[in-house]
Image (cartoon, rainbow, N blue to C red; front, top):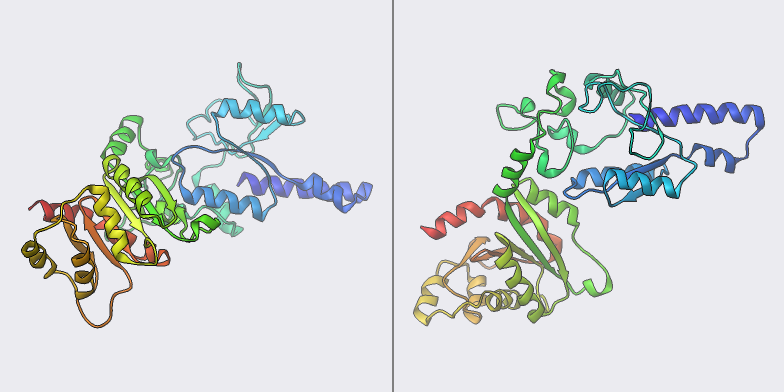
Length: 369
């Protein structure tokens, strides 16, 4: 809201100045440029990051991205831009820090000196959505799936007031009780419990293109798929197709995280080498021939051929795959202890990632029984 109000005011001001002084195109562009400061925080929603970058690009915003605390960021920003004397903010009276503010409020004692301009203090939640939807302005996609107030991923969930009987969530703009705007925010104690209860995951992806700087998977989508299923991505590594390095990375992740997921294939696109890396990483003993034959009987023919060559132990089970037949499925997932190997090209990785993680608890209970 603030961005679009500010752009409208500046555009009107520049237009009036142009009438009086006949500004050059370069000068009009300079005066119309929006300057902003964005503080990058840990555990940010990837959808928020994507929206911020798209907005900066769409409106040619002169944005500074600062990786520090709010106060330190202000000091750094104002030292770099001493001409800045005021900030236009989107604070409202019903925000936690909105009480007592005025349209023009000097910064607090102990902070850098600047003026806070608060043009929408008396707006409420409904006013914000009326403005955005009436003028068909873009907003972060999370508001369409049940979020009404956004903070860190560890302290924000969908608003329970918007849940439907079928488990789906209404868009944020359909919240009827504005007092529940922040109902999706959790307290520090709740956030700590939530964080501790979430499973953690490490992801390692193999591709010959890595050494050329080509990444075939969108890491933000991977993060979102895991987060939506209650799994926190702690580490994501892209690696060239080296079996020894892969085994070392898988071993470290297996000891550090609840789940390890591998994607892509090692060396010449062979499933055998990927499973061998898992075997080395987990130091798995080979099965006796009769045990191996009995276990292989439960796998499709194409997987049997792989596991006969690389007998990797009793913990191995097929997670996703078509029944045996002439046509080999494009993507198989094999679970070995807490390592899920998605055996297919990286282009298909995210097609099965969600189902793989979604079934983790069921697979664990079945294995233990």
